Length: 340
Image 1 (cartoon, helix red, strand yellow):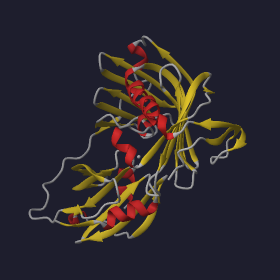
Image 2: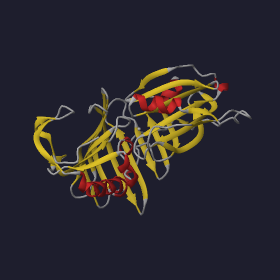
Image 3: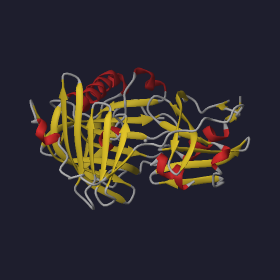
């Protein structure tokens, strides 16, 4: 179970409403004056802002400092992001604690842990806490979410922003509120809100520069890794022949299997099946452990950081569903698994 924790370690009214910004108190405890929210008839405009946001966070060149808050923990990070003819490079450095550093060059990701004198060598582009905290927009989301464009603009990091809300139409998923740069749609602040309107996760830029060019020298790691251990995911052993595979029978509305793969798990050479279920925005990961790995048996609900989790045993295999969604959603998905 500890290994899985490391592996897992992301109905509304259609009339105008008044929500507090600077003078009242909103669901997150923020004080503000009341502002108007545009009706659902302008959701297409709100969706265009979200499409621009998804492009901006990858395509723009920028450097800045942002705070990433999850539950009771907070981390301040420096980011330098460069897009050269479609190739994305990035350096993210923690300004707290030991000062870990993440270097991304295309699909190659190096995570430098100076306190452990270790470099983790990974493939993929999901290591950025900024990108991981943002929603990805698609038209199919309208079936389960309502998009709202707030009339009043506010300032974040000394830049004027447009506020966009993504509100779920049921209690099976979380919502978002986003503050997008009025000029570029770059996300300067984001809140992930649970089913009771409480903040689960927040990203807030305190300083940002959006530039035409950034020297590649700013992408170089600042930590001298000479003598550090280089760690790659362990090689996998072959799965047991005839092993029973699991698949879902009845999922919560809107969710479907979006990815499926086998991969290594920390502390074990045996592969774990990783199933990803999504409604296009909310995501739940399901980890199915190999019986040979002698997993620690756990059952019932739990919390992994800001994520809900639910574990049970299906056909002798330990199954754990994890996601930043309500507890009933991870439980429903975990209990839907059956032998093929």
